[in-house]
Image (tube, rainbow, N blue to C red; front, side, top):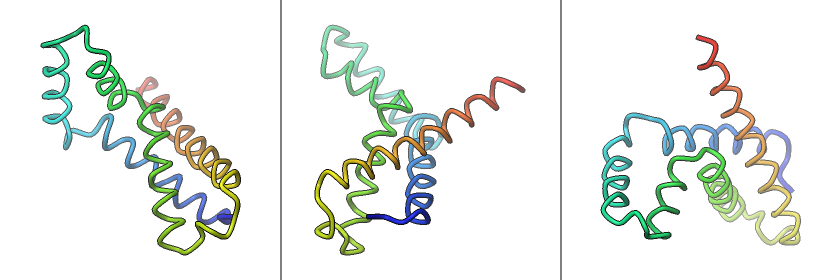
Length: 112
């Protein structure tokens, strides 16, 4: 099981990666192209799902947290140390902590 320091590190990484995917200007171009692609066929559920995935901190954050956790567990040799269910709870913890940081960050924008 990951320790609190690893949870913090992964949560910070998940928060930052989610900000990159959803908000940062660095990825404005790809987000705009994906949105334009979706607008050409608005009835496509697949296209709509992809646009939703990259525009929602909860959606992106969940999958980013899972990917970060999986890579961390594999690289550090922890993948086989615990049952899969434990890793599922770790995924919930990492994603939850990361989204709390995103919510806090978003609430600060509303104040100013």
